[in-house]
Length: 187
Image 1 (cartoon, one colour):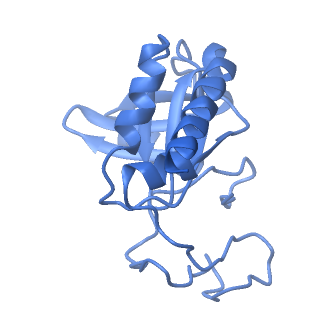
Image 2: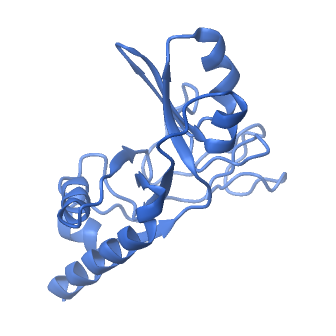
């Protein structure tokens, strides 16, 4: 799992500067610009494994992992607040209405922001193609069929499911069952 440079440690970063990352190539380290091994022991540098491209490959190959921490979605048009929270945000997206950020709940509380919808994150550990079709639909449908709302966040390496914190154990059961059923069908 990637660790951010902040003390809290981020699950993933959507912004890697202007550096292009090619599939099946080494991922550059943060500050030291090294490939493969970081001498500072704070980066995760690996060669990308095979990419799952079909729905059956993605679903049968995923391992859902409940991540530590509780998060909240916030939105703001305040540039100073965005700058203040930026280094701790695990996801940032610019929308017409403002900047949406996904931040640790502790930071939201410290910043006196709304924390009415605490979320947990389940990472779907499978290297899925950015052009793959079916993983998001299967996951959101399986959770929806079990009355579990979800917010999908796709990043370069993995998809991440954010859901109400009180439903994370049930969601893990549903996603594990989905994976096992898909694996059986793949034979």
